[in-house]
Length: 108
Image 1 (cartoon, one colour):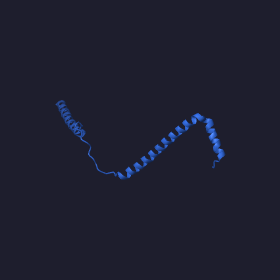
Image 2 (image 1 turned 30 degrees about the vertical axis):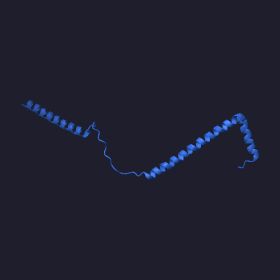
Image 3 (image 1 turned 180 degrees about the horizontal axis):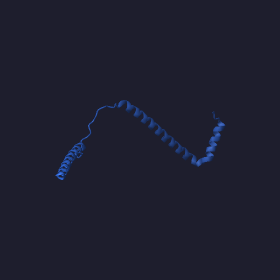
Image 4 (image 1 turned 45 degrees about the vertical axis):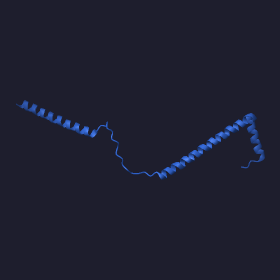
């Protein structure tokens, strides 16, 4: 697509008619600012991509297992469960003794 001098002149004339000669400097200034912002954002995105690739290559992952931090106020659920099971077993044995003594009293 080749633009000759006639086409360029028509484009300039259309821009002048559209914006007017008073608003044309403001429009071109805002267009320049927008282009600068766009270019800086694109450069920032490219830099972020490069940094992410570098970090991925330079940050090896170690496979060490770290024990969870001990919280002094934390509840030890395993010991509580074992204690509850022991109480339940004791209560079951008492209930069984009571049943057996009650059935023995009835049979006499």
